[in-house]
Length: 424
Image 1: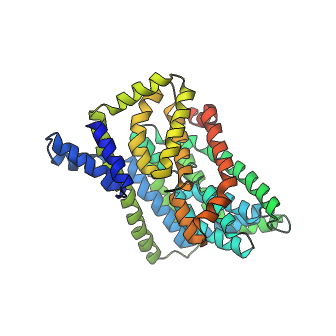
Image 2: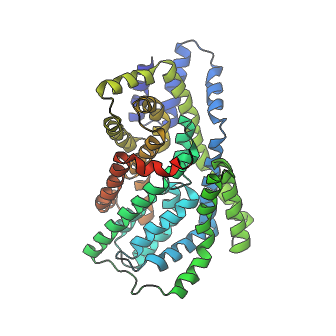
């Protein structure tokens, strides 16, 4: 029956059913076929959502929405423009650097694209950058968000695998910075080749200070959050709550631009976004429980360990699996459905679960930029008003630094694990 469920899921998915139904319908059919109490559906779904770490998900989504509505994103972009606008590539470098700052508060790639990305793409087009190139830089740089803390996908991964979320968030810092460095090098090379403009001179210290002050609260947010978690002052979920209060205080008291209407609008958007994520979390937990009952993870473990017991070989196999899955499934669905199956054999073979989490999530984030189902592709195409063909063509050079980052963090586990090791 487990195999039948998996086949049913694939058939419904290929037929174009919404992801929630492709997961829920086979699970409900299994319960009826096995003559289990139908109330089991509600019980497993409710149990999946009774999770303290998952409370961080709507909170960080709320932070991203508040930033977009309160003008913080504009100040982040202005400071980044002053600081790195002279580097070859100009606003392309600003785009990448801004995403790193923004990711320290929102933790979501699509929040970066939908909020900061609109400002970045419009500014780059005004300066004479090709719209497709502008969209490509925006999409590639947004991948940093779900790796650098806070990270909603890493929180979901941690809740599924019972791995320390604090260690996962710390493990994402170095890979995120590495990815930013690779992206900036690529943007500089492409910009020099295409002859794109950049700032005429390096900023004076007075100009840096002038634009630093308005952006300082945004820069201090990730520092506050990381320091609090490292010191044990609060958990990731509590860090999310503190960040919400911090952004509200900054918006009302420092910038004096946030209004009650902004809070209401951000709350409504957050409720919609959170519902879309958590309903998948709930039904996927039911699906995963049935697979566990049918011992599918054990079968997969025997299959993988039969191929090889070398951790590196298994990581490469899993990378290929997630790269393909990322082309068709969003990161939340792929994490909830696949990770519980492949994590046990890899951990048994000696792969650190924190390392596996970073590799898995970064791989799935690349899926946001791969057809046919890459969500970032559709959003960027709409914002930049460009065809999908033009966007994919402009993205080709940026797949190189993204895949290079994936290769480095896969092959060099210590790069990911040395920060979390300080917490053990």
